[in-house]
Every structure is written in structure tokens, then in C-alpha cells.
Amino acid sequence: MQRELETTDSQTAAMSSNVSSDASSEASEDWTLLTQLTQAYRGLLDGLMDRIGLHRAQVNVLCRLFAQDGMTQSEIAEQLAVQGATITNMLQRMEEADLVTRRRDPDDNRLVRVYLTDKGRKQERAISEQAMRVEQSVFEGLSAEERAMLRRVMKLMLRNMDSES
Image (cartoon, rainbow, N blue to C red; front, side):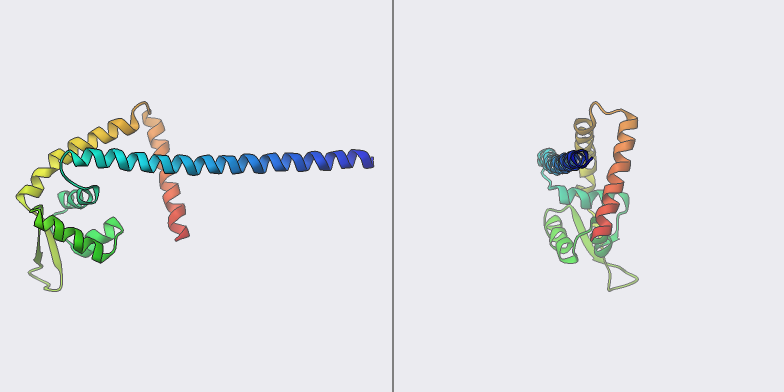
């Protein structure tokens, strides 16, 4: 009986070690895949945005303004989850490139609103075309059900990360 217990204990330890090793290997693979995915996505997006002469951060700002022209700088910063100084510097460069203009709110002089210029508005079509190319590249071969599941998983992962910060 003692011999059986020793064997069982050693088998349990070996199984536990294998499970731990498997979990560690899976976690490592998850980490590697997430890293590769984010790097590949960023590279793809940067390459496509280079074709229209914009940086992806500028594209994010323009897309917000396509949806709601006249947002305040702080609203844009909040939606993009960046610091106020970051958005101020970005908007300054975009203003120098004649993509946006900043004006004081006529009703509240403390607020600075951001508006698309004609040149900025003209970027909407090019951005949409590049976004479609990104979507086609990234989601090729995935069914609608797989994409829906992927969205659910990514939303859960984002909630998990938000709860950690």
C-alpha cells in the first residue's frame, strides 16, 4: 500500500509538472502571438497610411473629426486615450499641414474646438480606402461568426486590461 501511494504521489507530481509546463508553454505562445499580431498590424497600418502621407495617430484624429467635426481638444484626447499635451502637439503638426484648424468656442472662450479644413475633409476617401485594404488583409479567411467571436474575445481582453490599470 505504501508503495502504491509513493507511485501515485510521484505520478501526481509528474502530471502537475506537465500541466504547469503546458500552461507555461501556452502562456508563452499567447504572449508571442499577441506581440506578433500587434507588430504586424501596426506595420501593415503604417505602410498603408504612408501611401496617403499620414501617420496612424493623425488618421485616428481625422476619423474622430469625420464623425464629429468641432470636437474639443480634450474630447479628442479622451477618445484616443492620450494625454492633453500629446494631442496638443499632434494638432499643431496637423494644423501646420493644413488638415485641421483650431478655434476658440464662441460660447465658452476656455474651450478650443478642432475643425477639419477642406484638405482634411478630402482625406476621408483615401483613409476609407486604406481601411478597407487593412480589413481585407487582416480578416481574410474568417467567417462572420469567427469575426463576431474575435470581437467578443478582444472586448473581454480589453476589459480585463482596464481592470488591471
